Image (tube, rainbow, N blue to C red; front, top):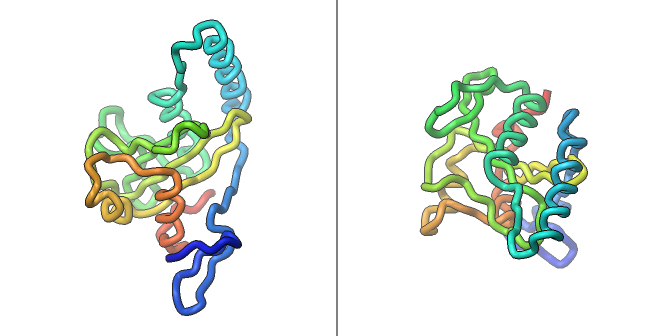
Length: 177
């Protein structure tokens, strides 16, 4: 796949896909937008008072918000806490791992766990300060495994996730309900 200057992905033999980045933002279910605005406000206040600390919101809090969005948007069911690799389950039985990160220009990498694990299905959300989310990746974990094969870390960049998303066919994606 080659990206040209017009934002098109050229897959070969003249096959082009418009809008490589997709930037499809969707408003999160309530009360997430209001809560996120309040959290980012608190973060800004703390950063201004104690500038030597980043007060990053990534971690369990953002991850939990991502799981709630996935649960509501895709009508998934929650697996018991402590499940080793997956968070949720689709109606068809497919196991789903959810990762979420905040939209931040200085963070280009999305952590996909402490070690390279295979996911049945992976959903990766990017959340912004207004309560909108973008799905960076919605597809089989096997595509992620191939991309991480020669890496020492379990993380991928947002750009890599978006590029991998282009290779996921519609029937392989979870559908919003």
